[in-house]
Image (tube, rainbow, N blue to C red; front, top):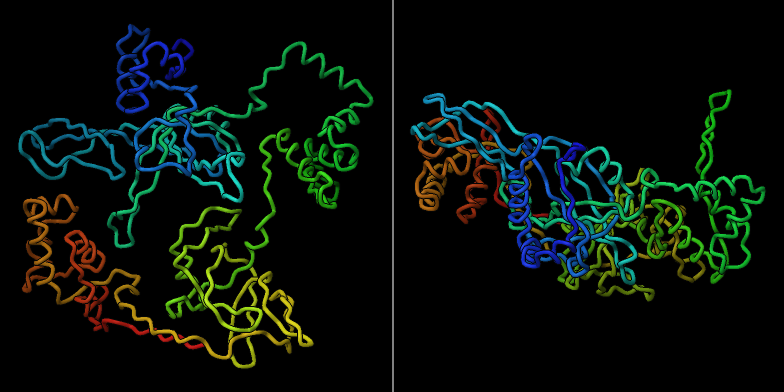
Length: 559
């Protein structure tokens, strides 16, 4: 504390030797145990008053280690630690933890702890007053979010690394720690898993939740150059190497010495390790110091071994196998049609978009196809059959796509690397769409398996938030359900953030002016478990003309 630090780092292994029961309690109930530890620190006779002091634990046992892919609901609010690579990082932003309000009637000061994501205000005062309170002050802490990706050396086979959001607060976002959590850094993070709800388009909370790792301690796995302390003996060795005229050859020979030869390859890797100097010439042209190396050779000559060895030497380097990378560019436009195994014809975006794929590379996501997803495909014998796709890909739209149109009027939009089955001189060939020329013969089915018409509700297609007319009786039914659910209409209005007069008068009384809006109508109906989409028959924009809308829309797709 004399150094000005507002945190204390404790080794978990030492705690487990001193008090095994307390160590077990920390693993089981980390939030309560840490809060008690911080209160205990404040009881000491300190040279100055400490408002916020934090206790950090490190050096956990291997039994507490958890892979991101193995996190389940049973691990909620349990202490764990994991290693990985920082892939994304947000800016440091203030996070309010408590707010003080003043009652205008009696002057009483109310303190509200902000423990949820939604900002809370007091509802009532001890004097009995209800309504708006004067805000006096907020208490902030610094917070930051990062995305942690599993370490690649812990994956098996062709598995893709999983990711998890991590929340850093207080001293964990200090300038020193910020340097340790820059994207590409390998870190070890200990903390506990919490859940956050996802928000639906209608504004309500979804039943699906997402994981967040609330960090207690973070430490780098790889030593940063700024943290390296060179001893006197090491300094003498470095100076001695600098005076050696053959230091370059010695460094080249030190790269994978078990692989003989390949001097030029090792020289290229060494030069890439150290980089060059950025030069600006007299004519303002710039020559960058970094370089790219293309390593080409026969199979089995040691290319992968050299690269894997280089990853261990070069800071923030990452080895990525090329298997499957080329497949990431083989995609069609989102409106392209496909026939699924029930015989329904759908746009490919309706199959891929609902799937939250795993990050594969920059702008590319993938996931294995589910067993129930089958599509109609064209085989080499030019016959249609049902097949299960191996992988579903989704990538950021490229700057250039190709549109192929046949003489019969069939069209398809796809990336330049996607291949089409063509026929030339009686033989079938796969040709990239970027290489397709006018006059080529492309294999397409003359007729498709019978599909079915798709019927969608008009309400699901409305993107704005119009006013809904002639539904006041239906709203009154919903309000009655809400009153039973929350005890009274007043309680329901407070809980849902709705003005009472909306429930009592404007939305439910036919003689009153004003009508409910679509999103609020759907949200309230969802809370009480009612389906009201069929009741939406007349809508208008604010003070606009009332329009009648059909209930359903039949989508007939023509090929």
